Length: 249
Image (cartoon, rainbow, N blue to C red; front, side, top):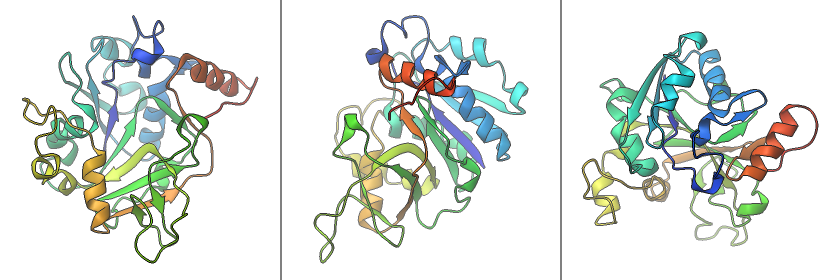
């Protein structure tokens, strides 16, 4: 299995910390955020990792090198000055991720931290994607998706289901089949950025289309998870990893 780390964001909400350092390279617990992912990927046997970049792209190879310190081979996939969003970024790196075939791959946001065991994720998802979901954090109380007792993920309760089924938040971690992206142009339509070269679009519309066909599974991770979206949440995570306080999602 190969992996993609989303690291092309501009980090605007993290200023001034991200003026000279991309968000995934900010330190937490004594090492860059992204290094926690690289360690997990190496431990589960991944050897090829794509890291998409945009803002301060040159800093990634300077800090991470070629990946050999983790037993990995890193591929830095530059998207230009404007990030391609999650869907466009995945499509842009797809040839590398799928190795020219239809092998599933893991993708994870570079600005999250979690104690989830990546090795426990399915190598062959039952459908087009398998998503890790978490309890809704304070800054995202509405959540994203519904996970049914059978492990299927939907955009909301279906007919005959509990209209008050709780939503969960997508953790920014999942396993995907390349086929998820095969019909991206029809699904995205004429949304802004879809006609750019390379195209720029978000992943959720593709996931929702697959959910409508019952082709997305998921799991509820009840362990530790943090979306490092603000300096305050980064500080809280750093304190937790140092053993001096709790982090809040």
